[in-house]
Image 1 (cartoon, one colour):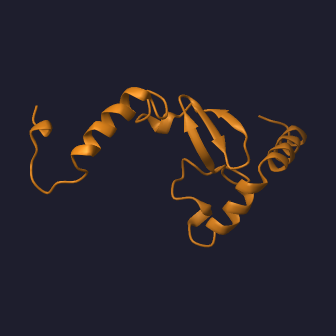
Image 2 (cartoon, rainbow, N blue to C red; image 1 turned 135 degrees about the vertical axis):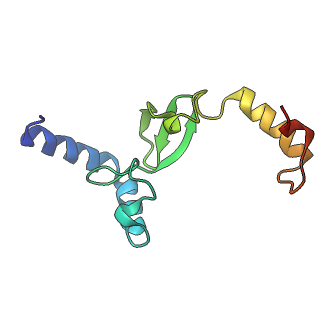
Length: 108
């Protein structure tokens, strides 16, 4: 178990580097329990808020860089914004985005 002193120092360092996430968390707590829509995203003293992601890397709203070990809990197993998925999504989006009718690509 982490000693209280080490935990306090870690929290101080986290707070010093994540002021924008803290501000967003305060706003979010006004509309969401614990300031997040998912218990997986919450941690003490507040969650980080991601600005962008590429490959296995996340950047928070404070510019801090992280390795995303969760990869969206599975759906982003190729990483964030992989070129192969972006190209396929772009090709598909040119044909249309949502259809109430069936399409051939949905079979098989």
